[in-house]
Length: 303
Ligand SMILES: [Zn+2]
Ligand SMILES: [Zn+2]
Image (cartoon, rainbow, N blue to C red):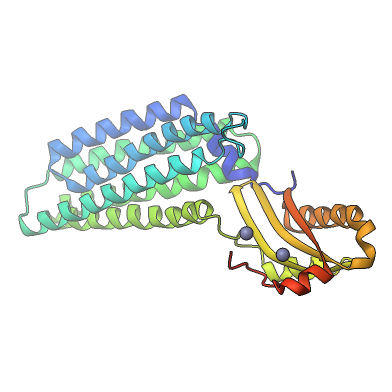
């Protein structure tokens, strides 16, 4: 299997129970601290963290489903269960983000007192838990490649908490309560933008889009460079999931070499696997005389 993005997938494939528990505990704590202090920003960060625990749970459930073997009902296997899980979770995140935006706007209109010392305290604890999680990951992850993939999102996720900590300190010193809804807006924007970005990626795969690094004209050109191949058209290249790609195409071969069809097929499959990491290809062969009669030569079929 030549095409595989090992880092992200592997790092996410083992959501550890302790990290889910730590995340959940932290979220509950932040939520309570948010309610006690009247800080919307702390609530926002709590929701953001809750989502991490939720995403770990969703990932582990959908991962389990997606490992099921293909069968007569699901011939493509259950791989895309993960994509559906991600779709649900990301949609929920966008809704949470929009809720936070409306909450922040309401707070701008009707300011409430914020117990800034609680905000600082809550954010410090949260940051401490975040850093401990990072430290534990550091200690338990062997390869540096996996470590980087696992740490990057963790560090990015600590950013809102860090912002809340600074904002809380500033409120404590200045008494400016408008910092709180401002922080809430910033966290909401962070949540919405990062979710939309991942939603776009997930949707692309669900829409069976051509993988981003594949240029169809290049696939055609390289296929046609094989001796005996006259034309390649009606081409589909799509991803079953991030590590499995499939291709479907019509291959026109010259009439006088139809006896070499088997050999050409083998060469084409080798080319697709090697150059484009496409491990599953289905080819429909046509003779040059038939194809010219039908005049169907579009690279992207109109169906
Ligand atoms: Zn088609
Ligand atoms: Zn055709």
